[in-house]
Image 1: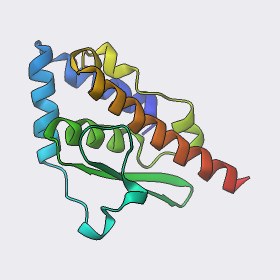
Image 2 (image 1 turned 30 degrees about the vertical axis):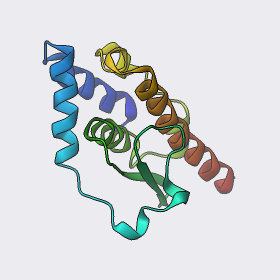
Image 3 (image 1 turned 90 degrees about the horizontal axis):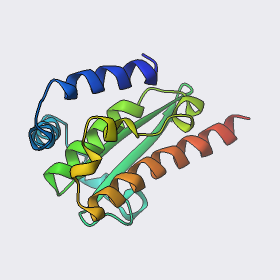
Length: 140
């Protein structure tokens, strides 16, 4: 599924939830359903700097596609990072580089985060896109 299709699906699903705070609650529940990282992967190399909570994103590159897993000690960050990792996973680097996560603003997620959480959100996307960029450069 292309990122445009994934984005449309996420926007449609989140738009069905009328209240912005209930959408954040949805993301907390989303995070609860994600698998945990192996403790051996919770290392500095995978830790996202600039996030108030502890957040790890583990990237992989297999068969021309990027795959991401995450975990955080904050329920809301875990849910948002998990959603973004699922969104960007199984995509070629070029697709990731050309798509940001501005759609989260469309459904009222980013506006209801504290400035520090919004900064963390941008750090997640930045990390994912930087990894995709390095994968693309290594393919050329």
